[in-house]
Amino acid sequence: TVPEDLRGPQEKLRRMLDELLVSTDHSGNIAMLRTPPGAAQYLASFIDRVGMQEVVGTIAGDDTVFVLARDPMTGKELGELLGRRSGANR
Image (cartoon, one colour):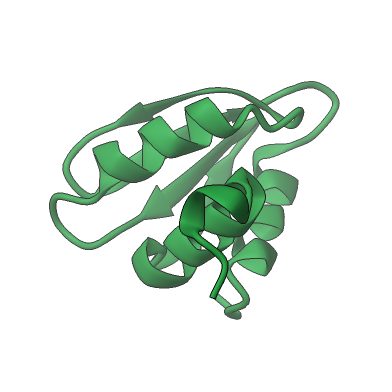
């Protein structure tokens, strides 16, 4: 197998979303990601470090992440993009 650090951040993000994304919602230019309790800060930190062009930044609580979409993307489009990256239909 290929070591995790050689697979790249996009693949790790996909796996993290597979494991941690419970649901998505949106408002304006914000995508809201629901995670299991205690997982939101971990996911938000990784989204920030991955450096997605579509993302300005994140704010995390215990089980909720707000992801600010970069113009002209909407929160709905960003939530759909992250949902598709997870490989799940949420």
